[in-house]
Length: 137
Image (cartoon, rainbow, N blue to C red):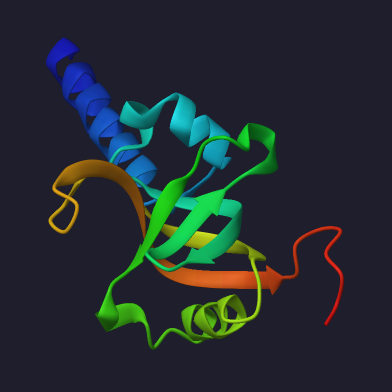
């Protein structure tokens, strides 16, 4: 009887961890990710961020931790996503706010600059708007 209970408990624990893994991306602030990068490393996340284009790429930031940020990376294979296409088009004009889904990588090696950096590997973008308080063109 005790063995059956132990097996049942083990099964429930395994089933619970499998459900947690399939729960979908975590909705979290960029500031929280940057405060605890190891906790979010390799995890699929949803972030509401400001995105600014630079001559070297795009940068994600949050007004709550304005001096911090991470680089945006989009795999060419997912650039056909309608949200990412709209994001890249909007960034030609100005910075935007957007809800981004993707994977956080705190220690990506940059082969061009020969250094490690934090990146957000985006798989989709939604709710793309002008930054709060921005003037329309």
